Length: 341
Image (cartoon, rainbow, N blue to C red; front, side, top):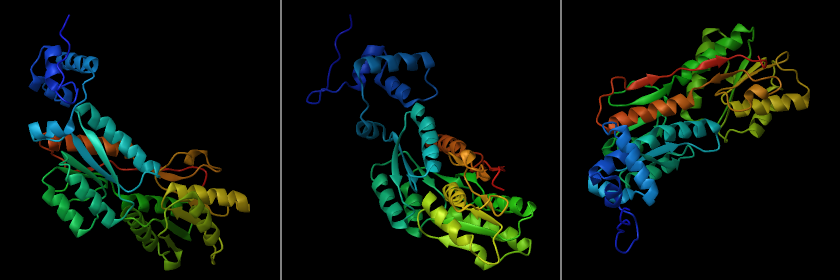
């Protein structure tokens, strides 16, 4: 029978050395196995993890960082948690990072530059191994913090070719243009663009809509309905009631996000306005429930889970010092026509 684990004086914690003795390997091998380094034999990794589980070993991130000069966590900045878009993104990031031995330190910026800067300063004080941030547009101060941090950083949800920048996402402007072309191809001529939150990605979709409307000779500033309030079903219903009264009549509404469009479809049912005969309604992101609306919502499907996985995978390569041949990864989008157009 093996000897009971030797516990650290004063804390009672099982140590890395205890796990090493139980697994019959060196402490450095335990450390490498638990970090998920690919050079460690899988059978050895299984033995180490079995010993760690049996002894109840809980890694001490602070001690690990001091001993190895490497942190075991990644800072992740997202705009909000109330939008399923970012929940999907986060889950994919964690699925990718955890098996490699990294934990996520999540910060929610609420689309506020000063809040993003404050969160970033707090997270950098913990010396993260890497950064995952949403979007590429931010204040000069925040950009400077990222550049001077000395840790790898990958930007998510947008793609832009800038020297030294790594990003995974899609062209928001092109996706907005594609939906506009779809509506025009259905014979719609007075196509309104309705947006809330007005974050950089929303404004890029607006630019895509503007480009196609101008190319068709149909652009009018009065077709833009922009509200800085947070996006929601309730706001979508309110905006629909306002837009539907506009003269000359609007025959299609492209909402910048599915929750607005879902609220609009509910309002149309309540008001007895036929969709799409009277007005077509389209959204963006293909959020949960869009395919269950009456009628089902036409939208743009964005690959947020794939973006999260690819961004986390790229960051892992950068943290390991590996070469990244493609610093810009465009995962595209999918136009999903349904009954609302």
